Image (tube, rainbow, N blue to C red):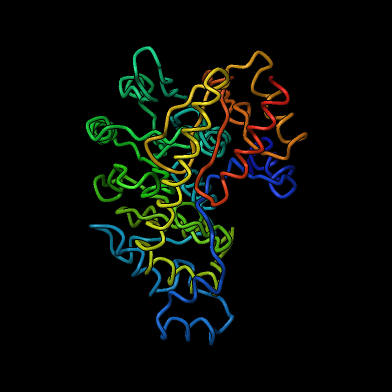
Length: 383
């Protein structure tokens, strides 16, 4: 088994997520109670949950759940879906099956750590950094496809992308996305597309198509945790036209979770049947929260450089204080109970990553209360 480094984000979350009073850096949307989710169910699906037989489930996923998931995509069928216990298991399985010691992989930075450390534990990996925003040029985060092209080697097997991007919320243009696909098609490169935030953002935000619908070697990774706000279910999946690759990942899953939780699959079925309603409700929360965020950052523009993200429920603002973002975030959580993620959590061994930013989340309710505490903290510490 490969030796993996400490997962900085999860370790940091373990320390502060349930201890801090104001969790202001969450990447998931507002969750709901079991009662509220079951209230959305049809009588048949509610009965199916209440009378569920608590035995093993099928490794690929329950047939009716696969049918609902396949319906999310334009071109995928039930035999082109493989369920996982969360998205992380899918990331692990995809990297383990696609890559070997003679391969080369490419990851975009900054990134969710496993998109870098898992391939790096198997083979050589190159990083391509997003270009940062510029107030002077009035630009947001961006990806230079030519940099991806320059990073490709004869043995490059996998490119991992994540749009809307964690932590910036960046979404490339349709033109750049299509150019990226054509580049990978030319070189026969698999693309693991982390699409767990797709659909989430300001009402009316533009989103890219699922890569498995537009590229024969595209793997669409998704989960109930983020856009749907149901991380407690731990149900993820990969959609892919390459059935042979899915079969290899299924055999890898035999060494991991074997199968998903039967109750979680029933609840995920209910959630996905109501996906449009749930995501629309979560986007409305984001709309309301962004009003408060815009006002907060306008008030404190001497300390922060803010740009609203293209999608998702998080952004990566710049901190301009002389004490540095690490000290700012440390004092904020220790003295005032407000939890943010400093940019060191996104440090990469592949490229330079920002040193003066932090992740703020705005997909959950009661954001205004946390902003009021942040405002009071700033007034006290930075008069």
